[in-house]
Image 1 (cartoon, rainbow, N blue to C red):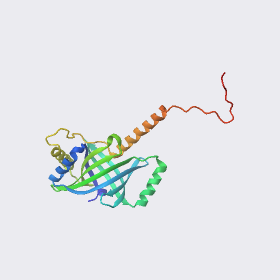
Image 2 (cartoon, helix red, strand yellow):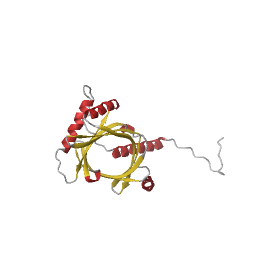
Image 3 (cartoon, rainbow, N blue to C red):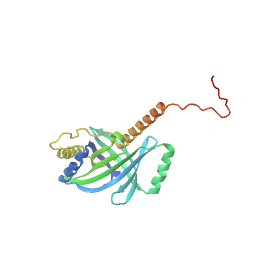
Image 4 (tube, rainbow, N blue to C red):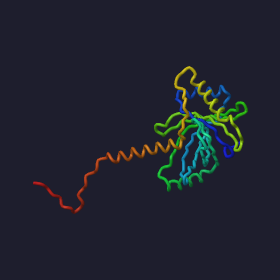
Length: 231
């Protein structure tokens, strides 16, 4: 079952750095197995009113791949997202051509850098993917994010998918935060793309303010212009 033929049902939470190891331990306790750790760089290209994501993913132990993806959020339900995504592998040359084309359209593309650790499990017949992302170079949005998702095929009635994802995410976080305060109760509603756009807007405002506050340089006398002295 591939994402091209499915809905993604997912939740995302921002978590504290010191809870990451406990979340991993909770995942293992509930039957999740480690799959990979990769360095991911996502860039989004504006195509009309849509956004296309270009991804470069490098494995820690070597090797890389490039992807192009279009994604559409169908609905949000209390932080839980129902999305359609079409992903395709592309080669490095194609990725470079698209990025060069995008530079002619937009000065700077919204970009996210993250280290992604992926786990997977089948629980009560349902397949789940869990990821822990370490996001960097994104200002106030830097930090660790925990995501849990399952895939539901198109045109398949699966009324318990949403509640299953919510319940499992809550169980995992409860185990990780057992006996301590700080368990996240609200899902992270912003997508990584929107975080990147917000950070870009903040940087533009800071640059504009800096230019306004910069003192004007005194005008120099042009060559040949007489200099007047006061006596």
